[in-house]
Length: 260
Ligand SMILES: Cc1cc2nc3c(=O)[nH]c(=O)nc-3n(C[C@H](O)[C@H](O)[C@H](O)COP(=O)(O)O)c2cc1C
Image 1 (cartoon, rainbow, N blue to C red):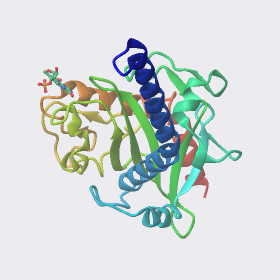
Image 2: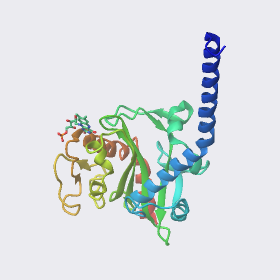
Image 3: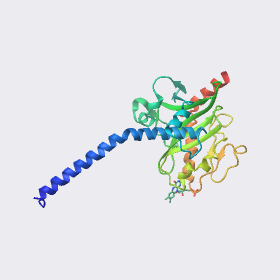
Image 4: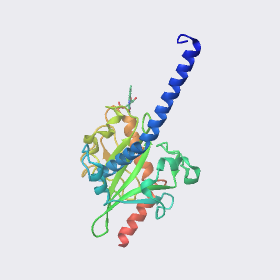
């Protein structure tokens, strides 16, 4: 019996079923933990971009929650630039919304290769004790060399001065385009200006070296051997700070600020 073809087939089939059950069960059991880890990673990146966490510092989930309590997560309607009150930003999945035609729209052709835009995005606002906007953290994404890079750009209350930049997900090559994660490169960003005097996106990642932020505010050093990724980052700044991205929202924030 043990050497019969039927035995082998039945044994293999049972083994396959057992393995399938094991894999599906672990996927189901681990799903919540994976979602929680993803949410924690997103929060760590927001905190780092906002300058509330040092690059590489490991914070516990409780510390992250404590720091996040000072951050206001708000929905923004990209087209109008208005904040939207209804819904829960904490549980909103922007990537899922982007794939749903009822919650997204086609993006005009752009160099970041963003094809669809969610109607609403979650941004993160930090205000001082007097209620004045100190920092706003904006999710950004765009194509590099191998795929889409996802990150956060934090701007000061003037909506132009960079506070920080982080990338939490990308497919660029470690040591080349992957250097977008290098703390030394990220340290070159704070103090640069994303807008020129006419409020047009102006910040560029150049080939070679730029000067210090105070003297050369519109340029950042390129990543060596990774001109395509560097250009991808410039394209992202250009797209997300323009009229299809956060342009209308940031203009609203500026008028609120000058009216206050
Ligand atoms: C295996 C391999 C991986 C590469 N990865 C990247 C990358 O992640 N980002 C990038 O811009 N260029 C990458 N390049 C290099 C690009 O093909 C291109 O040569 C480079 O962007 C030009 O930059 P440079 O003018 O600074 O040399 C890679 C090249 C090879 C062979």
